[in-house]
Image (tube, rainbow, N blue to C red):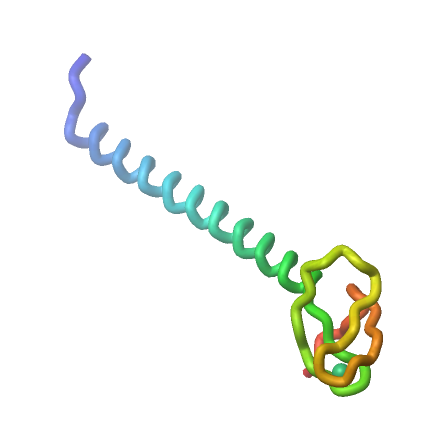
Length: 79
Ligand SMILES: [Zn+2]
């Protein structure tokens, strides 16, 4: 089997294209997953609007600033 230069170049280009697409896909899904997770843990206090993260698995969490009880996963994006 003889490999011509054209075949070689084609293989390299195709290979790098696949690598780039694969990398972009992996990086994007990883980013989305991280974003989703951090968003799920984000709590914005309904009283003082202090934003904080809570990684515990409880439904309600107390604000560290004013002590108000906030429901998790209900925080709206501000702005
Ligand atoms: Zn608060």
